[in-house]
Length: 91
Image 1: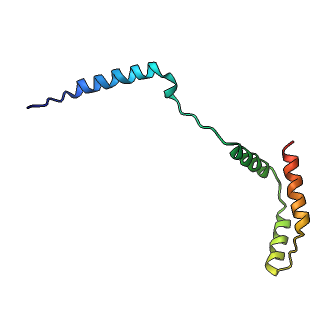
Image 2: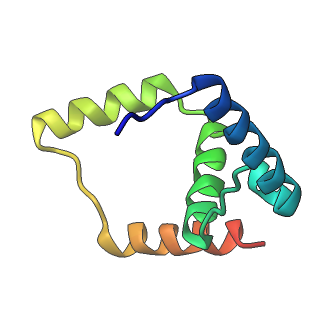
Image 3: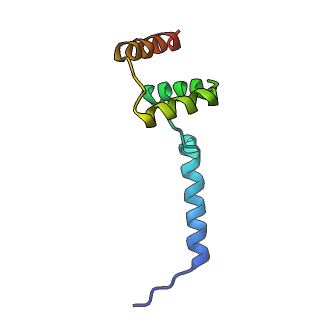
């Protein structure tokens, strides 16, 4: 038995089928992406962080205090600040 493969015929059949599939389901032409609620929240906080100006002097001062073991953190004040920041960003 001899099998004859006509490449041009195969290409023509493929192109014909591709066109008919595209006509039946035109929405297949583009991909979509949906960002989760959590992803949107992260993006929002990243955008806020980009716009915050940080004083280099303050950063250096804090780095030095940390190296020296003298930097003290008040846990309650830190937690309160985080909560207030989150409340303000929800507005």
